[in-house]
Length: 501
Ligand SMILES: Cc1cc2nc3c(=O)[nH]c(=O)nc-3n(C[C@H](O)[C@H](O)[C@H](O)COP(=O)(O)OP(=O)(O)OC[C@H]3O[C@@H](n4cnc5c(N)ncnc54)[C@H](O)[C@@H]3O)c2cc1C
Image 1 (cartoon, rainbow, N blue to C red):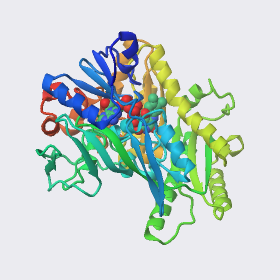
Image 2 (image 1 turned 90 degrees about the vertical axis):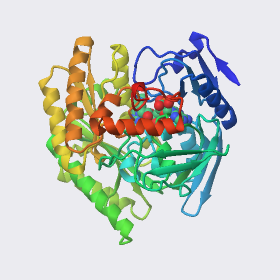
Image 3 (image 1 turned 180 degrees about the vertical axis):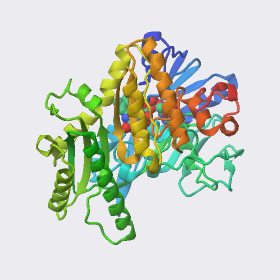
Image 4 (image 1 turned 90 degrees about the horizontal axis):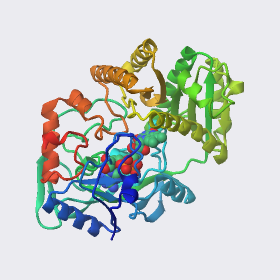
């Protein structure tokens, strides 16, 4: 098995897109089979060596940044084993180190759709599952969790378990997981209620009587290492209409979003009831504030001068509905005074890719800023309940406008989940930015929101998780982790501090 330990060879495994500094490890392992992973984990347990699992390193919360011990990289677990069409969709089996973009191409080629689409598609499937990643299409399709049918997971006991959805459930809050080696893992699930929001990636996913596969999804490399996954696929829609729509004023933009969102949710529940839906149904609704457009103009000189905000939308179509849906979107734009003539629309793959690239360019520009100014990323990831979103957005804007810091607000507005990036130029500004950030966390918790909707907690947000759930529930999470990893070697410092172990 390949291993690397020279500083220049392992440097790229010591950081991620959080720009947290100081990562260190003695060695990086590159296993090629589940048995090899299990062997490394069993040995590390015996020697009490910390292990950090590495995906592609696109995470923004330092989850894969190691502080001592070894790294297990998933780069060589990179085979797509199968993509099979079934009635009404299909399924794909792939190893943890397969890049999302490669999996999506393979799925596309079979006329199928894998909905999870975190904006950065160079990430690995294992990283996506470990963080329960979501993205623009989550508005219609939900997060990665909804598509995981089966997981092969290596545990610190040296066991490899194969766990399929629908096979193993908790008995209320008690779990009893049989191991191939003959033993079993017995534990209690924590007793907290998760926030009632559309997206949530903060701490372990817990429901009484839950399917045990869900415990591993979003567990950020702390319970076991995902080696392989079987994923549910959907039929690919016949066509797609997408657009970047510009607005002169924010009030009109927000009213447009409210209407588009409401109509989409209604159309979806009509479809679910089988009463048919002929109304528009956005699969993505993404927001760009004025400051975001200021940044994007650096790369796109065609962003209209008079625009003070924009919305990116995607609408699935069929040949029979295409014209009707296009005219419904155009009427909605007109009703809300969008700058329709200056907006951009796409109806073919090439155009869709260009519009998605515009959406992707913004977080990349933000990351470049943090890198250039040598600062840790100050980026919020909170989602709030429907009733609280308008007030939360106003709260962000009021606080940021009162500061003299640069910032952007953008992202998944359909899910009441926008990212605020506060952009410090030096350490003094960073201190102010973190103070504002904490104010935002506090308010999100107050209104019943989650502190991380999609990026996870990693090592950066664990203090805020204490604010969300309280010490006693964090201790319950730590006890659960110890049932899976008694030596406390795996993903140390992710989700909660090592002190709880
Ligand atoms: C420009 C940009 C835009 C982004 N936009 C989005 C977005 O829209 N939505 C979103 O959800 N995220 C987004 N992200 C964050 C990131 O892409 C996701 O969190 C992604 O799922 C991480 O995958 P990765 O392979 O890079 O994982 P890594 O960063 O390598 O690891 C992430 C965590 O998962 C653990 N892990 C990785 N692989 C495994 C495994 N096989 N088994 C167990 N644990 C494992 C690691 O230990 C770590 O804790 C964005 C990031 C960037 C840079």
